[in-house]
Amino acid sequence: MVQQFENVSPNSSSSIKVQAMQFAYPGQPPIFADFSLEIAPGSRCLLVGANGSGKTTLLKILAGKHMVGGRDVVQVLNSSAFHDTHLVCGGDLAYLGGSWSKTIGCAGDVPLQGDISAEQMIFGVEGTDPDRREKLVELLDIDLQWRMHKVSDGQRRRVQICMGLLHPFKVLLLDEVTVDLDVVARMDLLEFLKEECDQRGATIVYATHIFDGLETWATHLAYIQEGELRRVEKLSELHELKSSTNLLSVVESWLRSETKLEKKKPVTTTNTHTQKSSGFDASPFRSSRHMAYYR
Ligand SMILES: Nc1ncnc2c1ncn2[C@@H]1O[C@H](COP(=O)(O)OP(=O)(O)OP(=O)(O)O)[C@@H](O)[C@H]1O
Image (tube, rainbow, N blue to C red; front, side, top):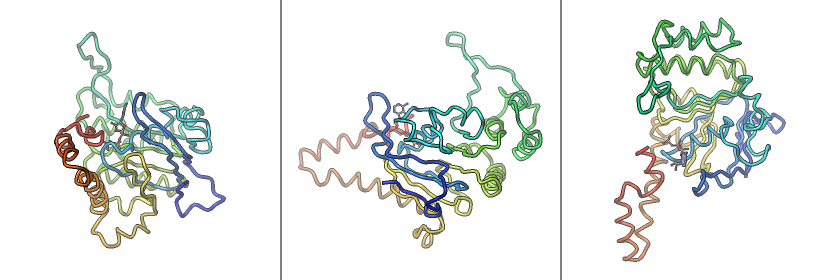
């Protein structure tokens, strides 16, 4: 069944449309078996779930980094996320995830670092509007003289974010990129992204474990458990949020109840089974979800 945000009128086209998607990494059981989701233009959707639940995999699929099914299965802006390369090449679809390494290459086992300035990185992106570039450099408080191999993790992250936002995207996929930012940079960036949605109708999907300040920022929330879409709702209609102090405690209670369900399983089995399960349960390798911690 397709889950759709309630503010999408039947006639409006979705920015993102996933229909009955199946996906597995080679040699692995499927992460997504029958996954459907629609996101309306202008939405700021938080993607939440436990470590290993499939958030990064979903964002990468939406970003066209994995080929999944036919052309109709994963659609972004009415085009195939994987097949229609103009989406990414033209800048309409932007993905910001992962973190930059200081290493730009290696000679045998020896890592090599290049001496490149922030200015060279940012001005190296062609076809950008100088006013937008200046606004982003100022917003992210970037010193164009920074040498990229000498800056801090947060400073390097600012340059990465700046480059990713230079083109006025229509759909932006964010995979926990604010993690290294200080609180001022993070709040300023969130405000900028909100304006992009409100003023230009851009759509943002943001996977995160940090919920500070997001109660008023996000319009929607999608919750994934082990590749299954458990909830997708307007934030203003999330009934748990009305009786909880904040989003963090709502998501915490969801994830804690996942753990409780799993821990209950061995209790219902026979003694022999229980003993085996207990031994396995004590192992750090007991499930892919827990394996996520060791990556
Ligand atoms: N390249 C890969 N090959 C095989 N399995 C993978 C690969 N990448 C991720 N997985 C597995 O896919 C599942 C989903 O991983 P994914 O990275 O999408 O989770 P996540 O929700 O983003 O987790 P986190 O919150 O830790 O970032 C996990 O079980 C993970 O071990």
